[in-house]
Every structure is written in C-alpha cells, then in structure tokens.
Length: 139
Image (tube, rainbow, N blue to C red; front, side):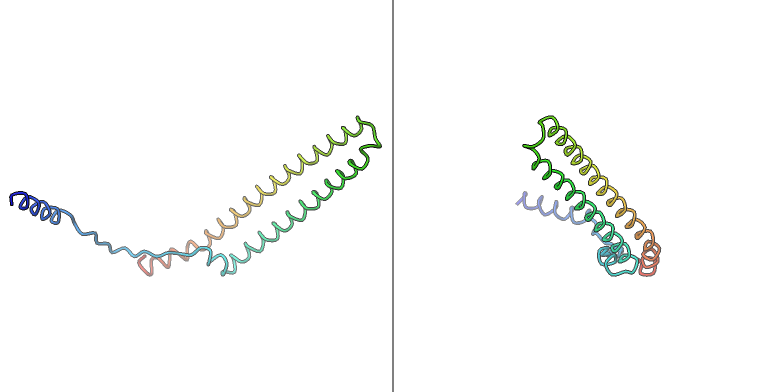
C-alpha cells in the first residue's frame, strides 16, 4: 500500500510539472521540385541544363569515337610497323584517353557548377514571394 501511494504521488507530481506542449506556429512544406518543373523560370533553367548536357554528351561521344578509330588503326598496323613505332602510337593513344577523361571530368564539374548556380538564382527569385506568403499566412 505504501508503494502504491508513492507511485501515485510520483505520477501526480510528474503530471503537474510537465507542461503541455502547445504550439501556435503553423508549419508548411514547399515542394521545390514542383516549383522548378512548373514555373517559367524553373523550366528555363531545366531547358538550359538539358541543352548543356546534350552538348557535353555529343562532344564526349565524338571524342570517344575518334579514340576508338585510332585504336583500331593501331591494332590493324600492329604486325606491319616496327615495335618501337607501335609503342609510340600506344603511348599517344594512352595520352588521348587521359585527356579524354580529364575533359569529361571538367565537363561534369562545369555542369554541376552551372546547375548549382541556376538553382541558387531560382531560389533568390522565389525567396521574396515565399517571405510575403509566410507573412500573410502567419507561417
């Protein structure tokens, strides 16, 4: 009985001391992807990024094709040319492949920077609108 009284007293004190969590703050969620895909400025950014990506892909495919063609020529002339000449051509191909990889990395890096810059600009443009909306709706 004594333990029951202590337990009930402890529960009563804990209910008294714990304040209920009341919040008057409104919470809202914003779907940025929806805004980007359906706004005029967002569509413009996506279109520019798509064009840049397509250009990069076509350049890389063209360079890759050239390297593969050179590689085929070297393999075809392998038995005809001297070993030294063949090794020189192999070194040149390896250098071309290395340059291709560097160009690819540079294009990817530039694309990422352009994408970040575009979305940063988008967020700067919609920020005042969001601030006004939040003030009007007490969010």
